[in-house]
Image 1 (cartoon, rainbow, N blue to C red):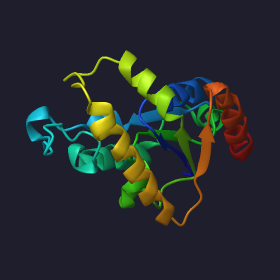
Image 2 (cartoon, rainbow, N blue to C red):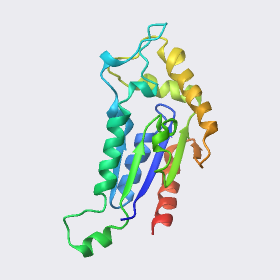
Image 3 (tube, helix red, strand yellow):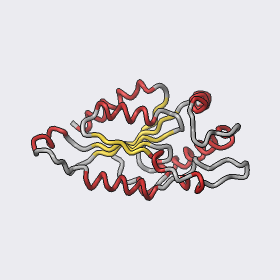
Image 4 (spheres, helix red, strand yellow):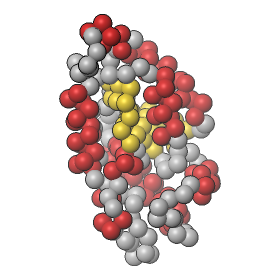
Length: 187
């Protein structure tokens, strides 16, 4: 069965999860896999020379487990317990994968039907990050000493990507445009 896989990546606190959830509300037969669900335990996270836990690197994530979840969805996306008429009414199964390092993980490169990278300015990102509660909490200087520099590094790595990524900045009002774009491609 045909499937449609959307990648939503970008800066921390840039609206990836919010956009994915809004898309899911408007698109039938839509599932979400969040990269944040695959962080390794704190005891397995490296610490840099400044004493910062290195959460903003691929090595902090169990990407093999995430790939298993993606593979499982793809193998089961077309299987429904409902009658055939209901299956056809539901349309093409859609998977939205959202996370901050999706496009830096090569095994995912071949699955995207569409890919989007969200950005927001430094000041807004830092403000949003300061309102979030993390476990463990961000230590003083963590955003400027680790989070933002790693975002810039990973974004620079994306310059080598040869497939098309749509870039978006600004408020999530653009989510409706993405929904309409997805709907026009699928239906």
